[in-house]
Every structure is written in structure tokens, then in C-alpha cells.
Image (tube, rainbow, N blue to C red):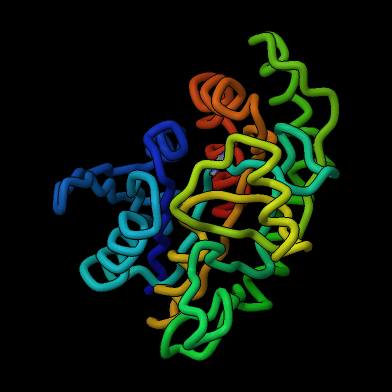
Length: 250
Ligand code: ADE
């Protein structure tokens, strides 16, 4: 039977989704609270992992082994690396890399030791379905409405788009243009950075669980990223998470 795992890194990324759960129950384990219930009559488990690769890999393993999830959706925020991305845009990963994985000279840079690969990919069918549904979200105006709501909260977002491409993950918060230049020098096609996606993708790959990683841009990974990130998280992140999950569980 289908059981969806829905994962974020912080409370603000999943609170909206938790409010969608019917017959909600809470299970605390490993210093995390797992919320179980149904969304549109489909079983779901919702949890925030805390930040970083270890926390998110542990949490997704728990979702797979203890809760028996059959698919995983990660939703949260990211810092933009591509100049084409603005705050409020959405990125769907078609490949993920751990930018802080470096076992040179034994292995090539970014290679996952003893797995023989450097990038993780969501299954094509899941990715295609996600692109269609998130695309609808922008086109049919739901997020336009969301944007006007956000503007009332002094967010100056004027347009919004969805991009599909590479996401880089690592235990690092990007807060300068120098950090941005450094990652672009070695991974020129990275759209955005965050701290969990590629770790979650690796665990899902190892266990054969279909996954998709969806990120909303909260900041430009530059000198203003701390201010932008905090504002986005405190004011609108949970609304984005809610709208994305509503669309994907319809
Ligand atoms: N998640 C959101 N913004 C980020 C940034 N600037 N660096 C890393 N992860 C992020």
C-alpha cells in the first residue's frame, strides 16, 4: 500500500503540511516528531529532520525502515546559485550532488565512496509527474495568489518560475559571493544549494525508494542571505510547502 514520506529540514518548512493531516498522530523517536495520518485518503508521514546531511539521512532511513514509506517528497528552501533564479522561484532537482564530498586523490571529486557514482537522479516517471503538477501550480495562478498574499507581508516578489536542474547539497550555509563563485567553478550547472537533498537522495537510491526534491529559493546565497533566509522562513516558507504538497497529493 502507498505511504508517502514528506520531509523538510525545519519546522517552518513542514508546519503547513502537518495541518493537512487527517487522523493525525504523533510519534517521537530519535529526538524527532513523526506526524502520521492521511492526506486525500493516502497514508502519509510528515517530519522535519533538522539541518544537514547526517540529520536528514538518519530521518529518511527511519521513514523507510520504521514507517515503511513507499515514496518520498522533500520540500524546503534553498540558496540560489544560478543568476536566473529569484527569491520565490521553485527548483525541482533532476540531479543531485554532495558538493562537500571529496575523497581525492583516492576517488574523483564528488564521488560517493564505494557506490561508484557522483550524482543521484529521481526516477523519470516521478520527476515528469512532479514537473507537470508544479507547473500547473504556477500557471493556474495559485501561486500568483500566494504571491499577492506574500506581498502584503512586505515581500517584493513580482514573478515566479519553476526551473529543473542540478541541486548541490552539503553541510555549509552559503553567505557570500565568493562561496558562490567557488562552487560555480567546480559545478557550473548547479541551480541552487541546500544542506540535505543529495543525502536524502542517496538513502532513497540505496533502498530503492522513489523520491523527488523540491526547493523554493529563499535567498541568493550571498552577503544578504542570512537576512533574506530568516525573512522567508519566518513569513512564507510554510505556505510554499503547503501549496506544493497539496498539488502533489491531489
Ligand atoms: N538553504 C537556504 N539558503 C541556503 C544557503 N544560502 N546555503 C545553504 N543552504 C541554504
